[in-house]
Image 1 (tube, rainbow, N blue to C red):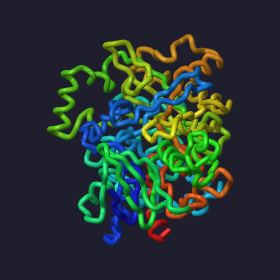
Image 2: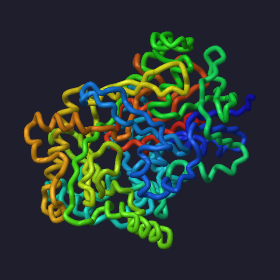
Image 3: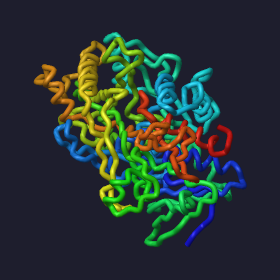
Image 4: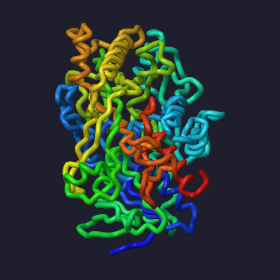
Length: 531
């Protein structure tokens, strides 16, 4: 059964929701948005604190990496969202945009029109900040951005400890200066998560020209000659075709987009032929250049129960839920990752090369050590902002239902290990300052046995993990490894664009959700001829 549309969008993550909303603003444009996951109806999605319960489970694809050669051969859990809103529905809601120099670097790498001066307006257009305004912030955009309503006492102590360590206070990580420590703004509105599905898609759902299909696995892009004309997808045990009279737009993320391209015959010819896939376009860069932030956690045990861990007890969790339901206040309004910092492993660097996330709890994410049962704790994560290590996404088989092989190749570059270790050392120093020492009984991970450079390197290899920021697997540019041009059109093909985090020429020095939404905004203008 075939249905006809002007635009078929594959993947209802951050960028896909933006594009569906923007393109359907034209009532004459027939838009279809297809998502493998279900609706964003799980109540945990909409509670800011719910992030801690969603890094594994039914709202993700259940991916793990291939054994990481430089991280003790570990297969690291690799959370990728499978739900309406994508990562913006399950992330920690941290709102950071990156350093302006990151985007100027994109332009220098061949992505003309993507320097900061070119794309800042799209950041402003997307942002609906409830507190900040001026040259650096939008106030009327669909993406709600708010302050943390009542930061945990340990979060406040973290920010003060950073200052005691010599890291200055920064009230706005998205302003003129990135460096410093402070309380993160979050993608929330009225103390509820504002995902791309909530901010962009939900107001558009009543439009007669917008069709949203959930629970549908896209099998392949359909080509006629060198032109993409639609997609085949499976839903409810039946096969369907969605025809695209204008364009097929792939927004399946840094893992899903290269997988779909390769299944459709677009990618490295040798790899496709090995799986018996007919080559439509030989593009060596599809699935290559995978880059991600490798995060390393330290965990402290508290003397008392000041962190969110005290709500792990059933009666306390019940009280927190009632407080939120009745008054819209209390611990449920916390995104857990309340505080953070941008700072330097190398003080001679032109811009910060480390980012820190402070979690007012312990064991909140899969694979991160916790504190002894009955105790409460806090966690500080750090990562190298611009890693040099490069990995890949490749096909396991030609079966669309098979998970791809994801190899971030963490720590393959020695500089990444060096800067990562400095992040752990600085994290320890922050935990050792007076303001946090008032609360801390002990640093549990790493324990006192970690002393030498070799010890720190071993700790990084043993405990580091993804920070959920994969990019660049269908990168934008004009070089031999580029997959899309600066208008996001796939090289050598017609009627096909990729518009998500996979097109970033390089990883930005911050969380990636705001940048992905910006890509969706600019892509909408490019498609409509306004770019």
